[in-house]
Length: 208
Image 1: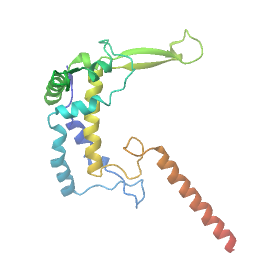
Image 2 (image 1 turned 30 degrees about the horizontal axis):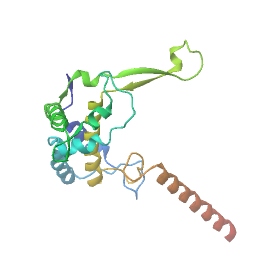
Image 3 (image 1 turned 90 degrees about the vertical axis):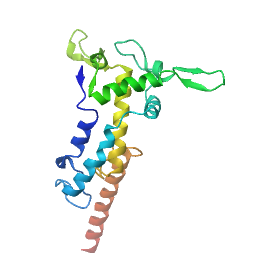
Image 4 (image 1 turned 180 degrees about the horizontal axis):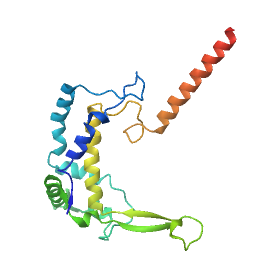
């Protein structure tokens, strides 16, 4: 068994560490702004929701985040096996038959803080890059894990992402790996600063 560090609490502790505090946009970004202890205690008390039992709704929503047409892990089943385990009932309603079992298994691992070793075994495929094909250094290893472990990662990631965004724990200058933001926002900001400097120097030069 592999220790999960008591569910998502390891993520909560690292995020709420004062040394990992976000940067304030109005100050030198090389100097972190630490939250006061009262604010930190409030965050810690609110962070307990990260360790709530996994709900069947979370599992259902997170299943949609698994990518189709990806290689299966060592167990041999693809993510589609989990995503589309749906049957039509006599009344015409569609029901996901694996949802209760998936939720129970994920909760057993999450609440106990351990995951089965088989979930942590990845299938490694060497992908040839270039050069001498007999040289192992010319191959890039691709690790493919079990879909159920990917599902667990999606659930925990969504919890942590939602919590940090709601609590304003992300640096306001971070755009990558955030919802509705991308590197394009950083490029736009950089272009704005460059234009500002060019305009400033042009104005200064014309006034001398």
